[in-house]
Image (cartoon, rainbow, N blue to C red):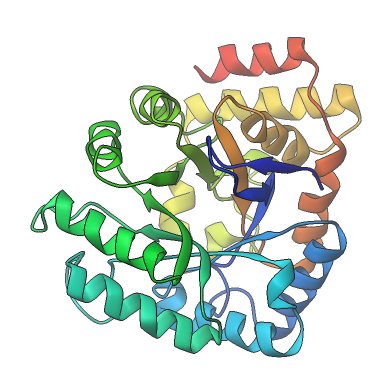
Length: 305
C-alpha cells in the first residue's frame, strides 16, 4: 500500500486507513484481529481509534491486539480526546484532554500516539487553552503530531493559528462533499492534511442498497439504520448508479471506484474505512490497485456535485 505525508508535515501514513468504529459493536475481537493482520500484510499503517468508539470497547479490543497480534512500531496510531463516554456534551479543557490522553495511553499500553486529535469544537473552552493542551501533548512526548476532528473551516483556521495542527478528520465521499466548501480550502491553506472518514457513505456507495436493505447489512441494524437511511434518496441513487456503471466499465467493484475517488482527491492524506467483517475488509484492500482514469473521475465529480 502506498504511503503519503499528512499535509506539509513529515508524518507518513498509508493512503487507506483502518477504522475501528464498528469494533465491539458489529465486529468482534477475532474479526478485528483478522482485519489488522490483513491490513498490515498489505502495507497498511494508519489505524484510527477513539476512546468513545463503541463506548470504549473498540479501544479495549485494539489494546489486546497491540499486546498479542500487531507490533506497535509498525503502526501509525491515531486517537482523539474531548468526547467522554457516559457524560453529556463535550469537554476540551486542558484538564479533561490530558486526563483522557493519559487514560488512552495506559489502556493501549503505549507511551505515545502518533497522531492525537481534538474530537470536536468546544465553545466553552478558549481555543488557546485547547492549543496549549495539544502543545503539552507533543512537548512531553505523549503525541508525535496533533490535529482536529469534526471542525468547520473557520474553526480549523482559528485553531491552526494557535496550534501546530497537521491533520483534520471529517466525513468525505461522493455523497458527502460539504468539506469542499470551507474545510478543505482551509486545510490546504494551513498545510493540514485531510483524513477522509466514512468514504463509502456507510456502504451505500458499494451498491448493496440499490434493491432494498439486505437483512445482514448495517442498514438493517439498530445502530446503523438511521445513518444509512440518510443516504437513500433519489439524488444519491443517481450517484450510486454512476459508480456502478463506472465499476462495470473498469472491471472493478463499486467499492473500489468510490474509495479511489475520495482517496485521490486534492488534500486527502488517507481515506479511513471501517469494514464490518473480513470479507468487506478484503474488498477494501483490493481497491488499492485501482487508479481512476481522469475522464471517469471527472464524470463522477459532475454527477455528485
